Image (cartoon, rainbow, N blue to C red):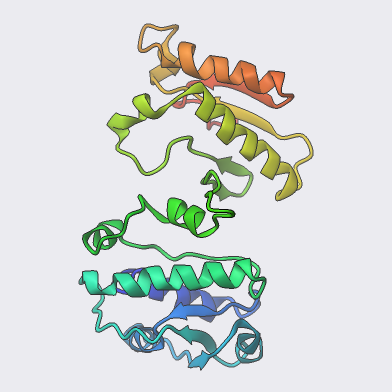
Length: 248
């Protein structure tokens, strides 16, 4: 459900109202919050509590199914409260567990408010790292890779959830190779792209202008691209980030 004081409940209700041909889904959170938000938005959407995803399938056609975490939250829209953190993180944990056990096919996360979670003691930088920790196998979390996808455009940031000023120090050839290799593998396995081609952006303006605007593009990014090519991955760059997203 996401942050209950934020846009998450609205998105959920609007998606159900607009997309009855969507695959069946179940919301994890607080059904009362959804009822109150639906009333405030003048959306006549029945909310029905269910015990499992299997039960949600039979309910979805007539009502929005919700697994109630039984953590009541007197949250008001637009008013953050660290007391809601347990509901937010509990919903994510429950969703991941249901997916790892095969009861659901995927997890869709609504927006969360990281600062509100930090104030309640949340130890992870964001969604991405939290999901990786919850997916840990044998005590070791997988490398989380975030992808932003829209239409034919798929963008993967190498660094995630750190201040911009910290990016140059966090960047390494090894990290670029690791993230790019995972990306190439999943473009094949999950997106059905037989021969993925990776365009790697530079760090500095104009990809460093041959070292005139920074050395990272020459000393860190270019060697990583060379290594990727040695691995059989079709990678080009570093490309100036201000022009690489144009179609031509």
